[in-house]
Amino acid sequence: MSRPGRPRSAAAPFFCTSCGNESLRWEGRCPSCGDWNTLAEAPGAGRPSRATRSRTHTQARELSAAPLRDAALSEANRLTLGVGDLDLVLGGGLVAGSLVLLGGPPGIGKSTLLLQAAASIRGSGGTALYISGEESAPQVRLRAERVSREALDIDFLGATDVEEVIRAADASKPALLGIDSVHTLTSTRSEGPPGSVSQVRECASALQEYAKATRTPVVMVGHVTKQGHLAGPRTLEHLVDAVLHLEGSRGQEYRILRATKNRFGSVDEVAVFRMSHSGLISVDNPSDVFVSGAGEASGSAIAVVFQGSRPMLAEVQCLTSKSRFGTPQRTTSGFPAKRLALLLTVLERRAGVAAIDRDVFVNVVGGLRLMDPAADLAVAAALASTELDRATGSRAFVGELGLGGEVRLVPRLDRRVAEAGRLGIREVIAPPAKSHLADDRKAVKSRSGDPKVVAVSHVREMVEILG
Ligand code: TYD
Ligand code: MG
Image 1 (tube, rainbow, N blue to C red):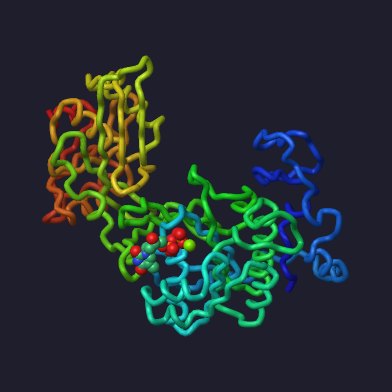
Image 2: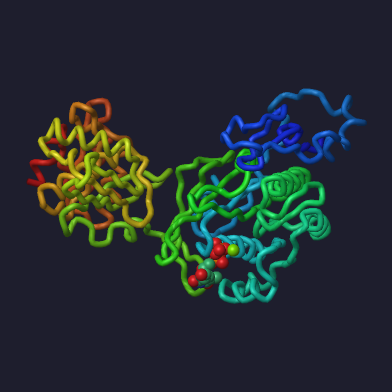
């Protein structure tokens, strides 16, 4: 079997030291980020890369096409980590030979999550090698003591030289190689300080080469910038198989893990954790966390959205106030600003709720992001609720809003209603069932103990219910 080589992009002779964009010729200005004088010669561009060197003499024999059905399925080789819903976010566990980047702000729990994943593998009889360039063995040991007994059996190496790391991994052949973090590693094949674009690029591709050649999954922790983007070259995100983000606020105990890229699964799944005295604990009922106290005061409404394969309740809070400047402010967290602009217009034109000239603030509680269009009706309800000063009470809202003010049917309504019922919601405001989707609705009606479903076909009817 051919040993997979380095990514072809690594052969480009120039790269931008600011954004990592690669270029075939030198230019004064980076065509990608627009920064001046940032293009530098890529390390090793003139000479063949390690992988190319090892390949040239066998090239004629190795390069032959084969039917896809003969390709070895790495999907079958998934390593289950068993740390909450981490496996779900990964698409069903870590794929053999995959390179995963775990990003997040400082202090959020990246090292803890990596340590817990390694401990879980240790617990099921595998070996895990944990490399840290950030913390010393005693520091990691203190964390391990808090996490679990198995965590103390993880092999630890304090190292910052990527070649040394790969040598250690080659020697101990772990089931999982954890790197904390890629920004502390350096390679002798590159120049610049640790964390610089060229170093991160070089180290990540060396780790990728190791992962693919030995079929060992490698998880690297990565830093994020103040803006919340992964620090370093953009090529890093292209290079890896999956990018996971651990989010949440440091002061709060809940953490949300989501994938922003996943070659082996969906990017919609989320895992919710709580930071405790003994590491991250999975939250089995995220809906509970995100909606406590919702609907009691005006300006708050409950949405039922799908996060990947699971329905989840989310609380939307809105506040409006008189605008002090010419252009009204729109501040949103967890909901797309453009969608909000659309909902404000629909509310004004189709339901007579005029908040369009006012400053509008929208917040989705707990750091959830509502990408599901079914959240429209709940956001409109929260807006109408604050404008009319009427609480939404123990109701949930489901439905997509059209420009005419019509409430559109959303998929999997029955499961949304059931989830609302499970959490004590007594009334769900939802679009009427269409004939071709009648089965969905029948399922809703037939279950006893489910909340009452009140059908609204227009946003005006929803506002009337509140009024
Ligand atoms: P850490 O994993 O070091 O974060 P990161 O690697 O993302 O910088 O964890 C950071 C915080 O989590 C730290 O402030 C302490 C807290 N923590 C707990 O509350 N309980 C625990 O069991 C552990 C291990 C950490
Ligand atoms: Mg850390």
